[in-house]
Image 1: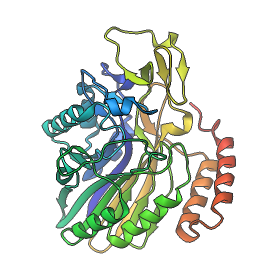
Image 2: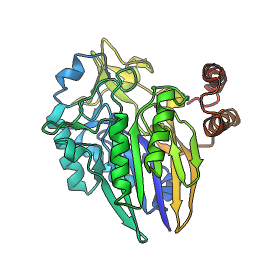
Image 3: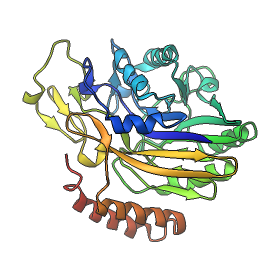
Amino acid sequence: MTTIIAVGDIMPGGLLNGTDVEFVSAEVKAMLNGADLRVGTLETAIGNTPSFYSEKMARRADVIYAMDTDLKRLVELDINIVSLANNHFFDLGPEGAVHTIQLLDDLGIQHCGAGRNLEEASKPVVFEHDGKSFAFIAFCDWREETVGWCPFATETEPGVNPMNDDYVVEQISKYKQKFDFVVVIPHWGKEHTFITTRHVYRLAEKMLDAGADMIFGGHTHRIQPVVRRQNSVTAYSMGNFFFPDRLIVKPRSTYYPEEPIAVQDLPITDGYPFVERTTLKIWKPLARIGEMVTVKIGNRWMSSQTDYVKLDDKNKLDVFVLPVSVRLIMGWQKLWLRFLPYVGYEYALSSVKRGLKKTVKICGH
């Protein structure tokens, strides 16, 4: 039997930079240690001397990065594979992207979804266990209304693996012929929503038809349903897994001060981070919840289990029990996606929004 645990988006720096505080509970560690493989999305650039990408700075887009030493937290979490296909991997430009790749290689953390050219960005991470082979591939959406802007790899230029429908289907079909299982990690959907968009649903169906066995989605900063179809698992979005609060400076860039700073004296924002002075950027309560999806694969069967984690006020990760109201909403969405996809979509969207407004206080800090 092979056990794989997938988690959502990871940014290992922020307020924890330069500290050695305990950032993950023993219970979460034990759950992660129970798997043969752990996979997530590294949604940040890495570098000590940031040079923000000019194209990104020219747009209305958040700029996120962590420092070199922050990657130690990936090692402590024992993350084996990360997707780099996301809209923040190039926030420090091509040089920062290559630097991040080199650091991951030095740490022995495998990666997919971005590279120095399209050949490298599309190359799968191959994992073999218990007589079975797994190919992990990752893609980033190209729609500015969903993921914003990020550079896509070409034959000669670095970038992320593009999530164009026909290309995605072709890649999945190709690797399904070579490996027993194909695992897709897409960065897609609309941020800060619990509803799976029409495009995400339809592209997920195309992925499954092309041969995808597992889909572990991210980007929305919100959890979305995990749906089983025959012998496949689709996690539309697993939310944030480990993404600490952080400092930002004008206009909206992540900031690491050279000297200690009195964080408690700073203004606070939980909105879109355009600021005039150094500000503490915190996540809203519902964005602090993430999914851990455990998939077990036997000779002729596959099972899945979804657990939840939450980042507390001190940026420590622990197991979390969803309130009944949220479980009901998630269960309703799961049934809707499984049996009645996009029947009465607008009504469903408005109903869920009304329900979520009532749960924010329950899921508060």
